[in-house]
Image 1 (cartoon, rainbow, N blue to C red):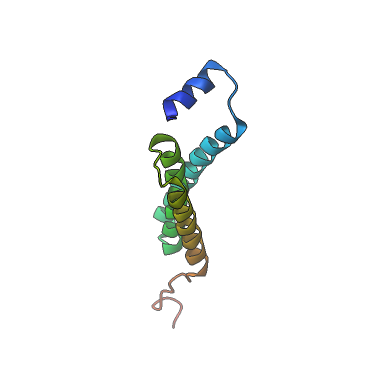
Image 2 (cartoon, rainbow, N blue to C red):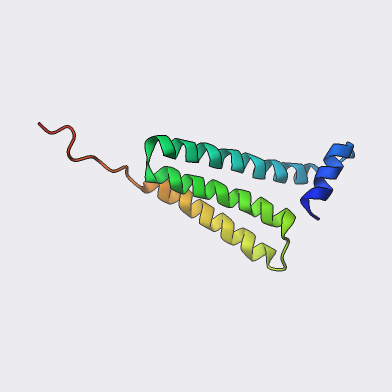
Length: 106
């Protein structure tokens, strides 16, 4: 089923599965967090923030693919996206910020 069916059900007030609503909410929340991470990166220019933004974008894409472009290899794609997003979060935590060697030395 596509977005239009779910949006139609939500707009008409008919009951929908709470799991489906949470999945759509997850995608919207991931898109918001992606936007906030990009904004934070534009202010601070830390590489870790780009990796975090990419991970949130992957979670958004997972929701998008589930509802707009269902595929026969859905399980492997979902697991692959989860693995990639978790890997990006890990690398973002482990990466150390660059030090400016020109500052702080007298």
